[in-house]
Length: 625
Image 1 (cartoon, rainbow, N blue to C red):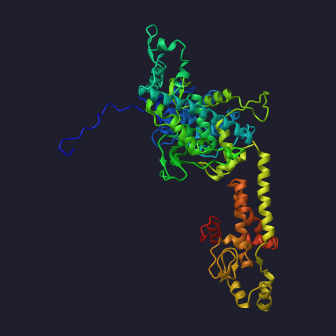
Image 2: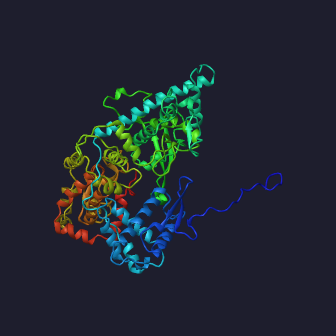
Image 3: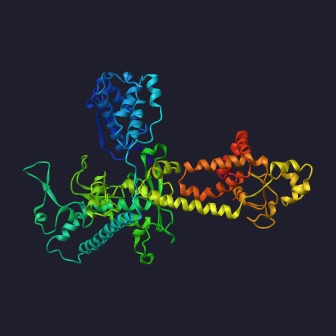
């Protein structure tokens, strides 16, 4: 109801758009989360019995329903492709199943063997299982099979390889050069267009008129073809060759598709983000610095659909130069050389594509002119770069040299977004939009690019921490025999460990316990002001002169040692070396002072309460600062 008492106008309600399995067909209609185009998948094309086709179509409709998990077009296509591969396999067995209830665990194993040559077989197997679990009336044995873990890799598959530092620099330098060239061209033509519209310059050959048209329409003037209806010919006055080809003309004010690819490449080099996140990055952003004069920071709302509930995330682009991007001579950097910081690169790309967004009405950051339609029906014109073709074409244009000769004898460097991301992760040793476990297992653990150099870095970091441990030593240890003697000769034992008899008794009674030891002088710690209670991490007790280790502390010490050891598989080796190699070496030395049988017994008698304490301790929940 409006404030004047009239009913407010409501949106017109037309016929609802069909989605899912269309009535009377085996076509599943889907709508991707990004974009409004309709995507139909025809399951009648699958090489299988009609009931299997329908069963897979129904499962696919459930899988692609809103909130069901598949909301990106590429993921939908991948799931349909795997369904087609599975039916192709079923057609090869001696007695193909007729319904999905006839499918057995042997068929799943057979499909795995059928696709064993494919590097992405584990992913395909997982996609198939997830799809089949959406089907109805599956046998219990098959359901159990579908819940089994997938293999992590295909034996013999080519490992991932990162670029060398020199190759990485060649790629980033080429991308920066493309954007600098584009910026000079577009800025000069925009300034010229402004003067033309203000009436300050003449236009004898209609070049400036064409410049104005390109700015308003993102294309050259065209007319309907009389001989070939449905096509649009370029106006004759533009075809005379005075102004160059269509790509050259449109690029007066807009990025080309390859320049947009260069922009995506540079953002990938400087952020390590997945290329799908970069290609779909929005132009809208939040300035976290508030334009207050500090280091400029733009925060973008990005989306990685396959992360499910964690799909939406922020991407912060700062004006601080990334250490990898700094040239060999840092003094060459200037205030206006914006392409050596993530924020600077983003700001320039945002500026260069502003006119393209105005023409297309798009909210995307990366837009370039494509002279022809894409291989999946994308039209020519201003749009986001898609698919690996753009990167292959950009790499071919620059013909960058590789450090090594490949199997075919070529020294040309292939530019692949996945390798760029892997190289960033290797150089920075920190996760980007994933966990440290994923970083170690799915990226660094499978990387064979600079493996020898990487091992040298890890070895150097470990050696440095072990040297520190040897130099500092470890806490004083009160042995089991000394504890027994303390009942009859407390003064001697106390003097040996530089405490008085009363303090020794409090140590034996557990009154001075921290986590892994007893503290005999909490008010005079070397890690804090004299006379003030110590607030340092309990991990620093390992080399503190106020710490004393007694036999009843051994179970906790063993658990902490084991937990640090297990952490090697959960984070990158360099990160582990810097964070835990020192206490791990100190604990190793400490445990070596005990009889191995006592250490084994301590591990066996550790309680759930001890384990809970160690979990909180290692997670730094017990730190006071």
